[in-house]
Length: 192
Image 1: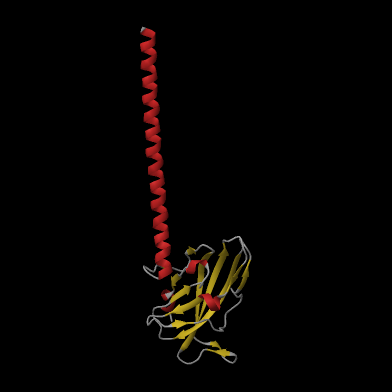
Image 2 (image 1 turned 180 degrees about the vertical axis):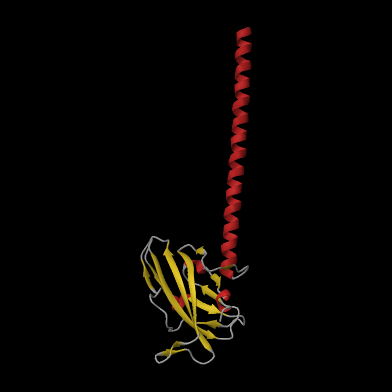
């Protein structure tokens, strides 16, 4: 009889330990899942804000920025107020801006990088400046980028010499969930 009571007590203790462990495991799993969902929701919220242009974050040259498809890094900016005097002079009141980019294709498919469609400059008045022919282009950033490959090249713009606040935008319409990347390149205008 004593052995039977002892066996029942042992089973009850074991049952309590197993029950406690199961409850602890469920609570821990829910906690981890909740944290993961919270992090995922935060990231989706940030991407949603970027897509709609809300809370637009400006990155600085030298920083890498990632979208679902690309990793972009603005390597350097060159300002040229003269151009090539006989062949490609800067018009009066304007200057050339050359943006040097590194573009990584993070996807598993080849991508066509089209600066004419995806990039522009915007000044302090909100005016956009499209891609144009400029001197100082040694290697174009435009073209096909193989899956997993990196391309470095330049693209150029022409802006008024009076510009004081300048931002470089990358906005691949209809691709890459329409992510918008904004680099503040105003610091390059301070020395002109």
